Length: 294
Image (cartoon, rainbow, N blue to C red; front, top):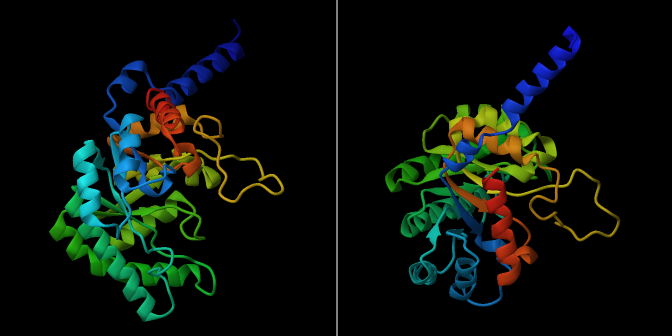
């Protein structure tokens, strides 16, 4: 073996060691499967939906803020599912970045309501889209306005023991992990962290780079895949490949989560047709199992 061959093999081995977690790392992970309520395609009441998710072997759900609180609590109690998180129900229609104070006030009220819901359900986190940088709202305006409103909610979050978790989404705002870190630094509160969306990050990724930088600031994760291929003409809006059928580098993602020390909930946010009945929901749960075991 010449020196060049030796160096190539050594480099390849080192790269594999970084990307591929060991079997023992996978077996030591403390991750639990949940599904976002708004992505459950099963028809019927909250209880009927949650019964199917329980049978599909999910352990938790992510309710939306503003739901009938007693109905959700009853469904959780009967099925044994736990609330992994709560998703703010109003952040897209009443964003904290809105130009007018009245809309921002409604957005803040929605966040506070979601924090109360999370406390009632025993969830420790609320997912928040912090703002939308388009339709006349600049990036800087979105940054400044949203931070002002989030800081108003921090005392309530602290009192309730529920963290506010910022999610990376298609809102023209925070498209790099460096921007995410700077945003959290500007807020500067232990009660505000990150709800990391793997599929969304993959589109501007790689997702594992985000995880490497955010590290311990990741409070929850959304397990979602993405396709790097351009959408086909006439493709349904919001179409997304099934988990493991897309372009996410799942071994690298899981390795990065291990190194970040992430534990807790892994929450599916795949399209609702991938959890429209017991068969499809079970397939989704089993795909998650395969990912979490990588």
